[in-house]
Image (cartoon, rainbow, N blue to C red):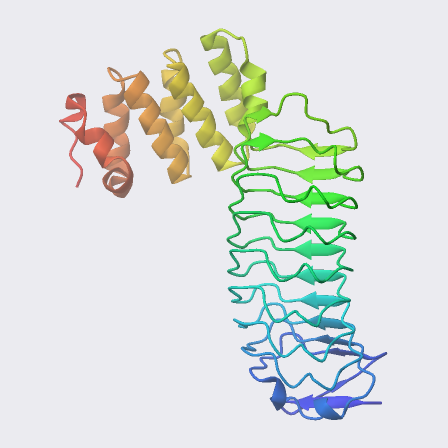
Length: 339
């Protein structure tokens, strides 16, 4: 049975698969016997300390390559690996997509959680079925027009503001756009196979008028403003505020809790001082506490001093760092000292 050696230990190749994940490898050339292998089909080098892709030229029949969780900053050294169908470079330090020119047979490509800010140089990978670019710095969906076989697109945890650039992807089944900056849901009539659309944690306040989503069977909108806004439409301010606070009490998302307080501030709520005071005192998330302080100061100016003073005594860093300007602008709080 074929095998390789690294750091005094022997690792066997089983059914054409070599697993060397989390072995502390810094340089691929340090793996003894790697170059003598024949018929290697899958190589897992994830979870190491590799900074450069090299010494893989001989593996022209390789189908599966996992280099996730390393320290790679540039995609290179893959020119000879023209038979790859799976390529994973998740959690590295890659800034731009390049070096994939020879990869025309890849079906699954994972470049998630890098530092990529632009989608480019993948339009030639025409057999691509699954693309994961989540956890990057991407602002626009583009460069995907020729990927006719693409079924799954994952772009969660980016900075995308609009859903566009997917109109030609007729085989898309799933789009994941969780936690971006999208404000509006557009028409998906051009995507007849789209079944799953994940939009949690965006800034969506409306669904475009006359939009068609007939193929969608699963639309996820948690942690957006739209559900909350729809639920209070047409209600009296006090009733709306009651409903918002009930949303607050069951929300697991700090972003949603903060937004609820911001809406209450816009409603000019005057009837829920005790509830907001309790939030200011008990809430653990600093952003939500700041929103509660702003709400108290704007809507309960004559009552807020004692609550703000108590918080400043218990957590002077919070007052100094997060709400000092709010306190300084109000004469009512002149007695409060920030140590």
